[in-house]
Length: 134
View 1 (cartoon, helix red, strand yellow):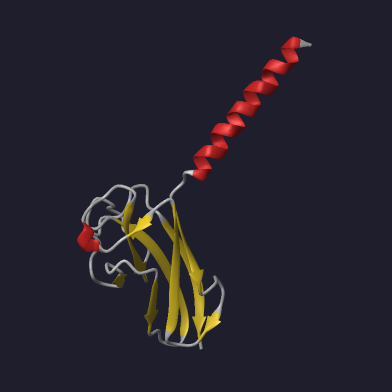
View 2 (cartoon, rainbow, N blue to C red; view 1 turned 180 degrees about the vertical axis):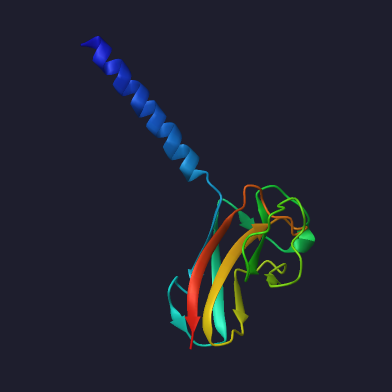
């Protein structure tokens, strides 16, 4: 009977460790508009950061802190370099929302979190949605 309690205790401890690691996970979510939404331009795009502090870029490079970027392309392949200026909106002012003009059609938006120097976190902290603009 005692041997049967030991594996259950191991499983319970493993579960607690896994739950804690998910609770501490850095995450960015696009909360507006919703994935799959049909919207009109201009479009208000808002992000939420979990286990990260959003601050203006001028605050420098601080672990666990940074600001949002909106990408209209896929994630950069080199996460050690600052993000460029093409097809990206830098939200270095430290805000969570940005109003953008988009042409009618389908658009993929990627929210990517980066340090004050515009270098993304590695592994990347991002979210993607697909929207249609009328």
